[in-house]
Image 1 (cartoon, helix red, strand yellow):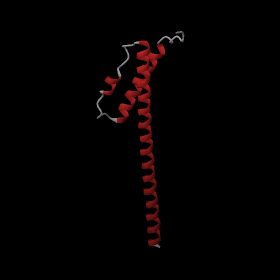
Image 2 (spheres, one colour):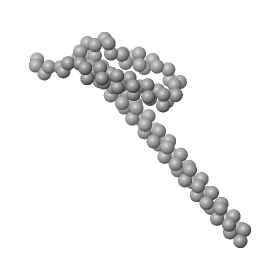
Image 3 (cartoon, one colour):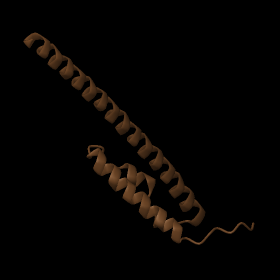
Image 4 (cartoon, rainbow, N blue to C red):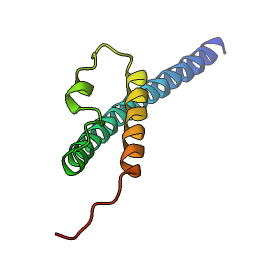
Amino acid sequence: MKKRKRRELEARIDDAVEIARSAERAALEIGDAAFDAADQARRAADTAVALAAGAHGLAALESVADRRAMPTEVDPLRHFTERADRVIARLRALDRLPAASSAS
């Protein structure tokens, strides 16, 4: 009877370990997807800033080179949050600009 309970317990532990490993793999995939999304958002924001600066000649907007000079040894979540805050600020600044006229 003890051997059967031990085998059942070992099987349950094995199942729990496999579930934990699967959850870890899923979390890593989600993290990778979040970083990919952040990179895409950064590229889109960089493009929007460059277009806005070119179209409106705005020196007030932060230059792309200055943002890229940011240290790379930063906590990834903090880096993502700070970048998101900068993107929001730039989008708000763009939202305050007068609409470009379509007349040539």
